[in-house]
Image (cartoon, rainbow over all chains, first blue to last red):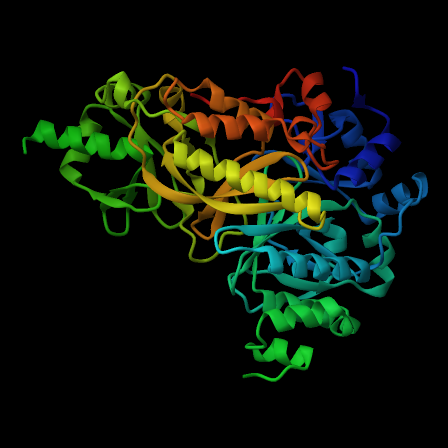
Length: 260
Length: 272
């Protein structure tokens, strides 16, 4: 079949590029991107990757899933061109470890990748969104995130946020930041409503929005300030504090405004 | 009410969501998606005796899920024939898919249910859709940091089995009348619809604006006002709609083509 990847090296690059591969339900001999339904890889090539230790197999309860291993990520990094654009070092992930209930010893993590540049652009977008959200319409903004494969995710230490959305902030050890920064980035969408309503975070890869979780603006700003403390001097950060009326103590403390 | 009448009433009630649950902890039967209603055990017994129910499974909380058999569901829907003048026209009918992380409070039996979304083709609903879309496109043109907007929209939830009946114009009773959120992706010329669902999210696949707006012209004359049709036509000529920009994270149409499938992006779920 045209377009099906059979070469193991190309299959590894496709696996890393897609984040994870899923068996295609109606064809046992094919795998494709788990999220964006891109790139077809032959099951034989996937099996070779598993035997080489470049990939590990799992199941999501419905179909087989394959993730790259640490070895696979290293081999792929040597085989592919370095990223052409500066994406920034990811120092933390805001996401969930139980978003996918894949039956592996360790589970992957999906979430927002928080690099300094990502945080700055997220703040700018939040300021724009808060000024635009009307009483009848919310505003959508874009963020960047991705899938951290199980063998990498298990090495991230995190703390679950008190918000009911069950999101977790996971810090990325310095020695792993290079590997994490080389992972495939996916588009995420954040829905911002007027007032104090929670922000809804979705992964926007493939045919439908996949809900990651909800978080209050206060919590999100707290997370961003914890991960990149210098952003509290950012005009956008201060503007968001002002737009919130400094009625929240944590945000007021962070932005230096008094609580009324 | 006679036994037959009550059985028929229960059949109609179950058919709205086409889900009947038995809580083995309390031995109570109930039905529905968002608002559940109790169902009399005697009526369920009658349906079981007539082989009108099939079991779908049981969850860890001890809830057994059932639905009407295809024949029973068909008969129940066809008993609600409606005249053409009363016919509801639908702008969008499409399945919804759950996503998110189930919490300890989530009901496992509801996580398995896959509702069908119906958005009516009424003047007020489509006016709201057109106005919100035009606003989102203008906002994106003015500031690319604002790729889209979200607006509430009235909609109905049906049993997934209702799809073919809605397509053929039968009157099917919805399980719930709900307020959904319409996500307008101005940057990529697409819509998505969704709503909270038992602690998770339930949403549709993305739909190209061009396809949904073109659907407005397919409704019978008189369904929509001339001004709404004109506004819809004007919006459908917007360059962000006609020449929508595909995002690199969208599914790949070439991949679907090579495996002989139309794929979600190509599917056409809208009906008149």
